Image (cartoon, rainbow, N blue to C red; front, top):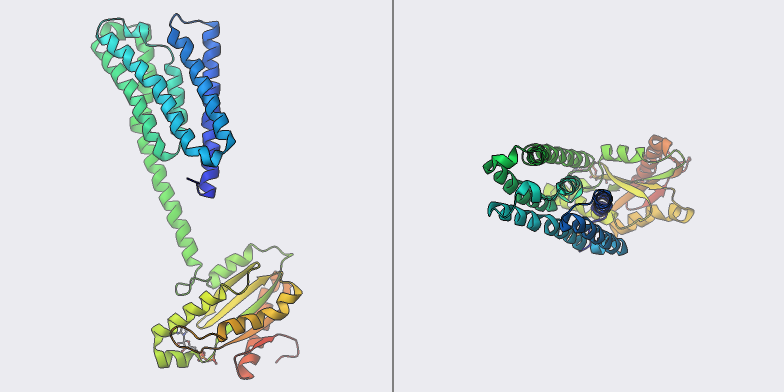
Length: 358
Ligand SMILES: Nc1nc2c(ncn2[C@@H]2O[C@H](COP(=O)(O)OP(=O)(O)OP(=O)(O)O)[C@@H](O)[C@H]2O)c(=O)[nH]1
């Protein structure tokens, strides 16, 4: 499955960090056990095996991060769970059966488990975090349980060490983490709904093109080097469409006008409802050819084919000259003058402003 672009970039970067950090973590334990050898085979083998697996996973992920993302996450989780949970449970069960003391046998690799737990919580995708919590619980709870029922082992250096390692981690995991992630989830929801409200406030409710406010915001992202050409489009005799077919049908005509407008010009531009039955198009840096043709293109595309609900509808178009985007107000006035002339000349036509216009 391919991830969505923005989400995927973040998730891929996070997974790289998890794998590299796990690798470094295992390297640290390998060096540690190299200089301070443990008498248990598990302590020597586990960090090496996990490090090799992490390296293999990193290479596999590097080959095609998009395609291998899900498998890498699954394999990493399986690796963590398989490396720590069964051995720890085995040590605990054997200790309950009196085969050995847990504090002597439980390997001092709990640090790796803890590091991987923190890494997992910080960096794995939200859905995968439950496996991290589950695997941690499968180690921590039985260990605690055992120590509580074996006070002789609890009141030893290693017993205290285990309790002081697992205790704060459990507190973080079961109390602080859910509370923090609840707050973060709530903040995310607020941010999303704020962004949605902002986007909605910039859109015309009926036609979903920009409203004036949205157009002002859009204009702000242009640079002073950008030149624009403004087109004003007004539906001819729209009042009589309303009178004849009703206001709801009039609305449908406006929706269809806006929808047709979206498929006429494809270079950088914005479409907005200027008011009532009047729309505006702002073209950014149009070339010479587009400049002379575009007003007529809009006029023809909006007037030639019959509308679904009312049949024939025509529009008049007024077009400004090309100037810096800082002259937007003047350009709107030019387009308005040209539109006025198009209306006076009998409607259903496009006129480009020139300073001889009234
Ligand atoms: N259905 C509908 N009608 C609207 C909306 N906004 C404005 N109108 C109507 O659009 C009509 C505009 O009428 P006029 O300004 O007289 O213009 P016109 O009838 O198109 O005539 P010309 O522009 O001169 O060709 C008015 O009747 C408004 O009520 C809207 O959102 N929906």
